[in-house]
Length: 485
Image (cartoon, rainbow, N blue to C red; front, side, top):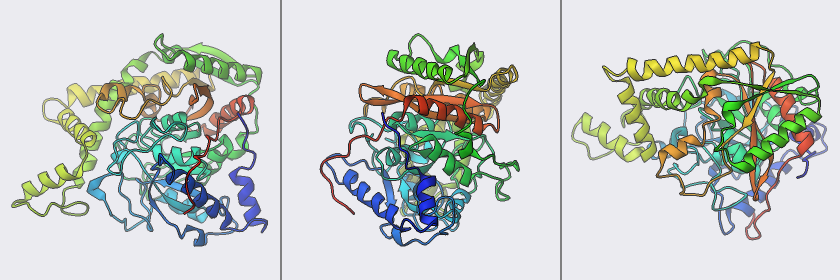
């Protein structure tokens, strides 16, 4: 493992001070992208790319001056299509830009392109994309995780130092784990969702990915804050997140929920998680066992709530207002049917059907109502543990390292279980982070940290301590073949 000391804050400072040409990092990014995307096994991390990005002129005095950033393709951008990885939005250009993207540009960041993703965020492997699967930079036959797999792969491959993703049930943290980078999902309401195409509105969040904890913190700090365009964003001061990486963990209480270390947990993942806990103890933290007893309800509750909200949100794609329109329909009903049948992929159709059923007359209380009750008791578990003196919880991010391409695509149950440790944080709305904790047979493994609402700074403090003790796990070797763009 090795440290990356030349982080985004330092390089942006060089741009501000005139020591580094504003376009130089974009040129480096395009060169790295060429090496990866034109090799024997292309990553397919990007859906859209602006080869003129080096000419973009953002503020030279911003916190991210000159930093190339990749943006997941479910955040609206003015200069790229926004497709959500779906045929139904292929070529669609948004008339407005997401707040998170506008804040990046104001900070001087250069948006290099839009990254591949599971269609509408529905997936855990980035195989459910109309534009083909993304590959894991560590092993071309492995998935990068999902649904923010393109963003995680772009950061892991060294194409960009930071990227924006979204996290509905683990879609930033699980790919961060699989690709060996840092991924953080903030508290629900910390970052504006304006311009984030909706999947499940009560769960969706904009998140940050970075090569290091400090890089991810720098990106999150820029995009955080109240937005009058998003009624769910909260007017709370944003703490100095990057500075939290320097606080140290002496006296910090780390809870280890026993439900996240079941007997079937991959033995290498268990060993690496225990090593990370030992590293926190060595740095001065107190580690104690805790329980989150209703964790077992998280996956069932999530796969009722999320599809139900998706069935409502995706009703707008009807072939009339925008997006794909079938030209052969002889009635409005047939237009809806053909446009949606042709435009949506298999996984999206599956979840729309599940959600519509859960919301239908006679089933609402039995399914959606009970799932919301389960969500409430899961949230109460977190509240109790943090109230009892725990500052941060530590768990594995995923039960296994990255699985093979095609291994679970026809087994939805096994695919859904890859998010078993990440879903509870979305249901409870608490902040959560994945940090690399080692390699298992050459594949990265992530450890997850969760904290009380609005305590992203505590997450970053603990993650920085783990990173300082264990180091980083990247980057993976660059393919020998390839060419510059």
